[in-house]
Length: 520
Figure (cartoon, rainbow, N blue to C red):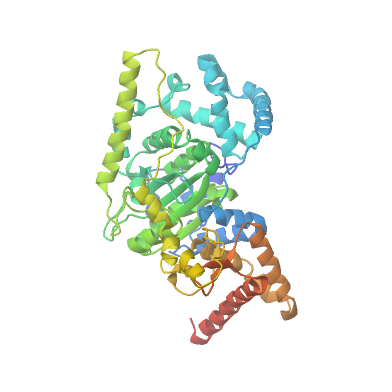
């Protein structure tokens, strides 16, 4: 995970600062009664029971970005971002710089010296080091620092004898394997709309295991199932935190020191979230749990992850719909149904499949000692044809009743060059289809960030602001499309786009006036 320059072992002072603004009621969720040294007494409890404090914190982070940085973050959230581009020559230079940095830190890092003594090939392996370089987007110092902390954690939780061993399910304890079946973590076969891998995390299940079990299980899932995939290293990972708490359920409290320990470990894993989606339900009990975990997590996250974090609210049906609008499939192997029930069959089936893979690999190795374990291969799950049709259904349905090319020719008219809307395009038109198109959602989010700037310039200068925003969005690959009289999509001209931008800002001012007038 992208580092936030957080030390592996936190002092009391840093623990306190790392959990401020977690929201009211954190003591009710994080149980520190059994830990006299817990810093919970220093935590600010001035926030509301909802999520406003964290929302304001995340919004402030977005406001500090340049237009290009903000645009990249929004593209990642809405499944239209670009994967990490690599120049082979630059990669080799970074690997050489990596080795130099390792040579500098080796004398100060006993765990690395131990790893070299046990199996130097393990820590010197090109693919091993590339994982850390790609996770840090080729920041060499960050990558080496993360690798050293990763080795420290692996030795701590699995022992020195497994420091240079690939961990499999047989290395987990019985408690660890039982924890896997709770559904705290789940990796679906299906990808999001842009082909990124997904991991689900369920809020009330995370606290059902000890900190050590949570760490060992998350190590196995991330390091064995996700991080080896080149698509994860280049495109990043979609993390979905889902509120599964039932109205009358009282979840087991998590100790604050356990939460800090788990998050500190997570920072050593070499991956980055390209989108972090929180699915939250309103209500006092849910707010207490979610606000606490959300507050701690966002303070540990780097700025890169924070600006790619989105909070979604509503019923389970609404949360499913919100995820679908962001390109995340919620059918088949999604672990929660539309009524908020845990789909235990999905969790158990996934766990059984992983155990079968581990058993087969062990049997292969036992019958053929020279065989290399066929695990951690960079494989990509192929989306079934039925799923592929679902992904394009919105655009196809929009054109179902359009005149055919032959029909246009029979009317003596030249068929136009057809344009198919892409996820980052802005569609002009009325109705839910256009409003909920991912490009339109992204357009509104970008415009919201420039509302104050637009309102503060003289009326005569507003056209300059509109033209600047139009040019910036078009430069990022966004097209502004409308249906012509023949029912085909075509690009809008500059005047139409500027009018659309101006209308958006005027509607915001109108809504604000009406709200003030009605006293809302």
